[in-house]
Length: 145
Image (cartoon, rainbow, N blue to C red; front, side):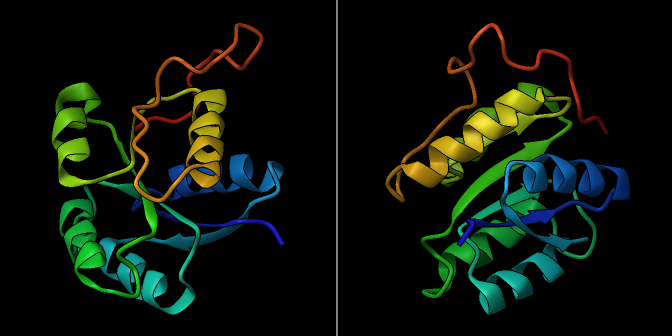
């Protein structure tokens, strides 16, 4: 059975691109359009991994992540912080407990490598999304906003 990944982003184009990239890599994809919906789906479906935009309506990614970690049912789900704020939030996200951080636009290969690394590692592993790419991997940015 493929790993399930919950993606949370309020921009439909980002959701579609993530869905296509992850589905093409044979992951089961679940979608949320805000932090509140993401938290609800995480509790119901208990995905293997969550990719969350930090700036979303209703409940932003930071608050959603704190609620996720406070709940015994969801506390151990690996999470990737995804944001268009560049590297400004990288240290903050990793200190907060996110397992990885990707800034938009990111490379498709970087995203897939980060996902694969987290899914194959221990629950407490942290990955900053750098340094594991080979030269023959996809090199153009694939996600913005």
